[in-house]
Length: 426
Image (cartoon, rainbow, N blue to C red):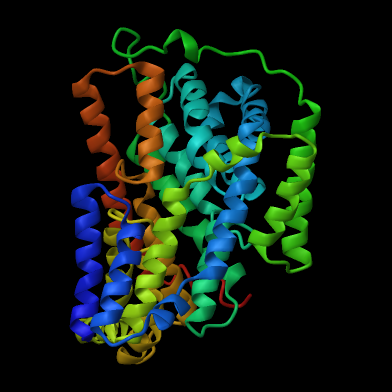
């Protein structure tokens, strides 16, 4: 049954990718069927439903749907970039740093991924920079702080790590993400020859009229209240250790009562597909674990792991899985529980936090792939800003895919260099 349960995960991902249906919904259905085959009762299958994860994801995403709906975060982002013309020579660095900062302010990660690329790429192009490079730096900047423990993804990853029996590594996970994606940002800058501006010719690429600089109004009362609630929410989660999702719902209710957004629009703005992707695979993994599937996976990986290959193997496997599923839903909950067994099989050659960070960061290096949210938003922003031909769009698609592959391989190899051991003293 362990083999069947593990194969079911592969089949679910393959069917979801092939049919373009939500893998989470398929996972929920397969979890019930698999449980019946394995002799688990419906109540046992349901007990594996990640209730805390669901509340965490829904609460945080609901709050940020309100913030997106009333334009507070988008306006804040634009105001941060509107006066950067005088700093054109260090604009790529500014993009990376501001994207990282915005992701701390917006721990839902949506602003860095969804809102910023079009803004940063437009401004960067007018300064003479390659807009694709600027788009990639925007996503990597967001990834650098995406594991903030008060954010959706960081909080979820920490829950997975804690459930696997590890101590609280929240600070180290965040800092190791910052280290890896800072290195990735430098490599992208070098690879795109970022020091050479005006790499494009005006007759080949030009901004659409609707991408021209726009007048930025002052924050209105609703937007000011939203930003205040955001600050209070972050402080509450950080210093009072309140549940992230439930805390977000409390402040969401305050905003709705203050008419800072429309309730129906807020519900529509919640990325339900992402939520069900996470909880669906989470429920299926619980059933697979009960049937010995994850133990079998650990044994298989142990059989091909050595002191020199275990870290790259985990990192690159996490990246490959993330090309076809959300990192926080697929590779992270699948691979994290296998770390202790793998590490022991190689003589405990790594500290646990090193391999944990390898899996988490490896999963998010694939985010710049056009098949993932980050790369898809860069490609969409490029299409909106420049209206490229089909041939040019394909070229950009291939370039983003190549960046994702190269950075994923480099990240896996870097795990052997001890870059994640720097934070172990914290």
